[in-house]
Length: 148
Image (cartoon, rainbow, N blue to C red; front, side, top):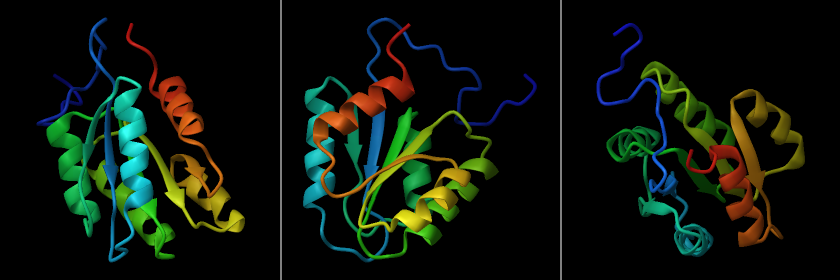
């Protein structure tokens, strides 16, 4: 099959009863994970299948989880100021594996002036302080797509 990537489906068709799968990750050395856990719970309560990776994950570990879980989306919580490096590395690793169908989003303390570059890197949305869990759930549902 042309374009086939081991461990990853090339074209993914969502079954009627298949739930959206989301990986929520806490990369780098930041130890504050309350927000990530709240988002993970909100997505789960909205009917999504959520894998929370825990603290101190490398981009390599996060991408491996995305592949293993056949995730539809991955959300990073970054409060450390390393968001440009972490999102760029995540995108680089996803691209290297031929994964272009996973929606990338994030949240944290991220300056407005960095948002255009993150968008250029393929980050679909950054949720900053004040965003509600309803905002996040709605955005993920709209951008991943409902079951076919």
